[in-house]
Image 1 (cartoon, helix red, strand yellow):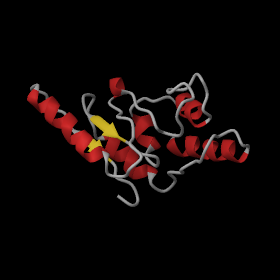
Image 2 (tube, one colour; image 1 turned 120 degrees about the vertical axis):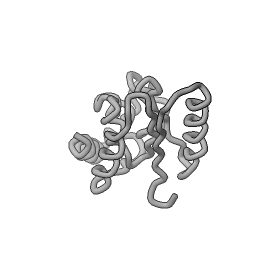
Image 3 (cartoon, one colour; image 1 turned 90 degrees about the vertical axis):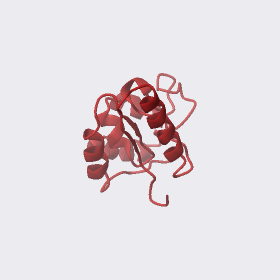
Length: 131
């Protein structure tokens, strides 16, 4: 599914339907999908631009991803932001921060807060190519 969405985004980009850039995840999707599939229902993941597979595994609809990349009003941010810059806490997806590595302390905070409340959840953060 990740590769299909990634390929379709590339086509939409070539058709000038995408606002901004497309950050392909081809070749990295296996690690992202496998790591995210290992998470439980109460766990959280913080994907960044090349970790779209994590969003799909956690239940973000491909339609939402397409609408987001195309800056559509019916997208997750109502056309106000681009690419994968959105999350859904009800699905355990924390929205990305552009600066690579910046989500690490955020995810530590989520894990500590959950532990302080008696929870036993795991958090997963990706740091990208240059993180």
